[in-house]
Length: 459
Ligand SMILES: C[S@@+](CC[C@H](N)C(=O)[O-])C[C@H]1O[C@@H](n2cnc3c(N)ncnc32)[C@H](O)[C@@H]1O
Image (cartoon, rainbow, N blue to C red; front, side, top):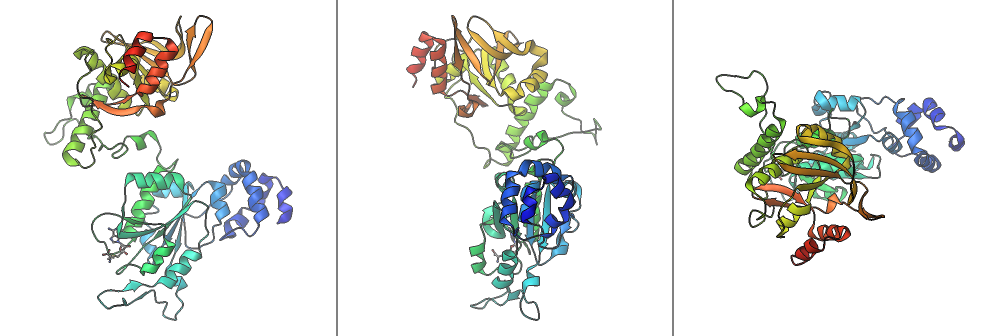
């Protein structure tokens, strides 16, 4: 194996995919590990075209190295009932994701590790009482037999665990490469097994007969978030719980079903109006059905005093579209000042948006665009801007990329940091607003002394 260190990755991979498949639980060659890590990028490209893992593997043969090289997520199901998973792992998007090698699922049965001749995996509880308890030794041996990827979590399913949530799925999908899912039965597992477990997770406040159902639920929820599982990643963002809001109602053909129509706005073709309707529905649904989920964000005490009702309508329209389409933004300029209590009237609406979303914003706001996203240069600014005019209000969407304030011959860098924006609400409208401190810094760079004095009083 030492000799391989000098071989080109493509040659190694085309010659040795089966070696990589077969050699687990850990690579016995630290030199190879090190070399592979250094040459990871080219190896990854080469190998992902070559190795065809089976959909579900009932063995412990896949190497830690292979997970690492292929960037595939590894799920180890530790279960007494492997057959349980056969059909669900072959169906729908999960089946496709496994075929596409976005992840692989390996099944390990603790019964295979039982030492006695009856392959016993449960026993009576100490202290008496009903039910059986899963013995610790077969489980421990099954867990010990698994390869250990660097970022791995061992999860035991129990009604006593932390609730399963979308945030948990996100955390697991983005931070780990191996999830070991231990499924309980009977009264559960011997408590000493918990020393081998990283976290306990519950599907909800009820009791099932087995841990396979929560394990499958978690696998499905986590795999769904891995890149490539869901065709359009945008659709991941527009679901319940992505924000603390439920999804809006959906309709499809026919336009009339058993005397029930479709909300007319959805047939109007007016996309801003549709976005607005959907947002309102999300808010109403969440308030009605899950008041526990709907966390009102801090609200400004009153309507900003220098914003007219007509201007507010436009602001609401713009913000609703940005929020619905998950475009990152912050309100800056006069409206931000007004929200913090400044006393200058609103001239126009200034927002910073993520530069990566600029083209998407153009598509959404095209009917009102008076200038497409482009470099905007005048005596004061040099920045990339999309300019709109909506019902008499000028709206400037500037990109969060290097921009400059122009002072004579001088170009002074204007920094837009969307990550420091404050989440707040004003008159029921959720908003991202530039922080007061960064608004002050901005005004300082522009040399707006009156605004500055006004804002500083508000600190
Ligand atoms: C009958 S239950 C054991 C319940 C346990 N004696 C209790 O009351 O907390 C058997 C197995 O099903 C699984 N299970 C049942 N309900 C669950 C839930 N709500 N969340 C996660 N796992 C659950 C666990 O793996 C558990 O070990």
